[in-house]
Amino acid sequence: MLLCNMKVSKMPPSPCVMGIINVTPDSFYEASRVQEQFALRKRVRTILDEGGAIIDVGAYSTRPGAHDITAEEEKERLRWALPIVIEEARKWHDERGVDALQPLISVDTFRASVAEMCVTELGADIINDISGGTLDEAMFDVVARTRALYIMMHSRGTPKDMQQRTDYPNGVVEEVIRFFKEQLDKLCKRFEEFEGFERLENVILDPGFGFAKTLEQNYTLLKGLDRIREALPDYPLLVGISRKSMIYKLFETDAVHALNGTTVLNTYALLHGASILRVHDVKEAAEAIRICGILA
Image (cartoon, rainbow, N blue to C red; front, top):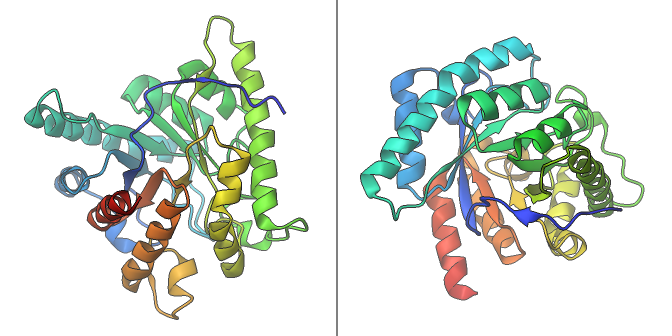
């Protein structure tokens, strides 16, 4: 495995919170959906006021069984949303002065053409790819060309069939580590092919809770965070468990009633090496970070 030693480029502070904005009509948690400008600006302000360092904007629902949309429809949603998000984040930063942390803007997409448009035309800082480069072979070219920060998530298949792909003969933790090593090797080779570009340590790893994992496998994976950190110590870990079914199915409730469980699991993740918490509820995650920092 190549696993390049890359130079860090504009990595977010660690640990920090990534707040979720979905410009979709069908994301699994209704409160995260934003469909009009005033609500979008308000959501940006809420994320930043409550302590978020990153805003993650998604225009394609990746919940299990989600409906597919075309790349053009995804682009259309993001052409509307991202400029508003970036403008409002810039205003927020300017109001607080030059010493304030500059928020980073992430786009949640597995499509290379969408990612490239968002980074090169609209100004996104981060590409958040739920497929880890497996659903669009051009994604690694885009990452190498743009030097954008890249979140590589483990998953299998597509949102429509991923929950039928949960067989891991060597165990889910070892499979996630193997996947990351293989995909990092491919990405490093793409960097080498772009002459004139430095190698950049621009990768954040996301184990992919809820994606091609059973309820039991999700908890096994969470307990295996230390093992992933040991195997891949140079890459920050993002944990995205906010209000997911691994919480509410355990208690036979729903996403609306999963905040307490989310906070418990986020706290566990922080104590076992998580660098970024991707959440719907920023205030609670930021408080968990602060408390864990006191205990460290």
